[in-house]
Image (cartoon, rainbow, N blue to C red; front, side):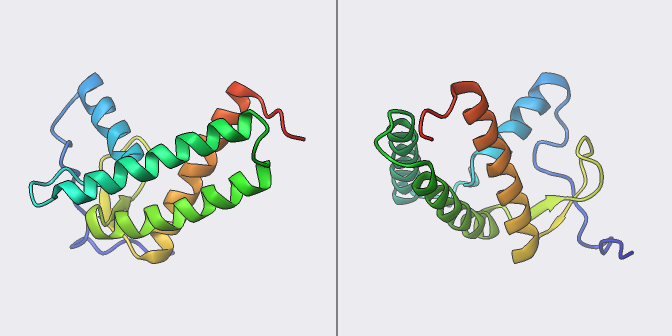
Length: 136
């Protein structure tokens, strides 16, 4: 078994927060792929709004029966690839150790694809379980 390089381990920006403030910051960190650093400009946020808006429209069309669930799954997979690239550029870290811990390490492509893929599968599963899938 290989242990992560101790030089790569770090605490996330919200690591000093405690309780609900930490939980909220961590949830936002998982759900929003872009970093909130000052170097970010308006076009990135416009792209984020466009992509998220398209995803919401696609989910709505799927649940109305206008788009098949296979098409939606393909779109969700493509979004996961885009999100992995965004995260590698703006938030290039993944958790190292237990999920409740605060130790992060530098991520490679495989780390990020695994993290984003599993996260998006869990989100899609929760949404389908909550709303039901009318498309058979």
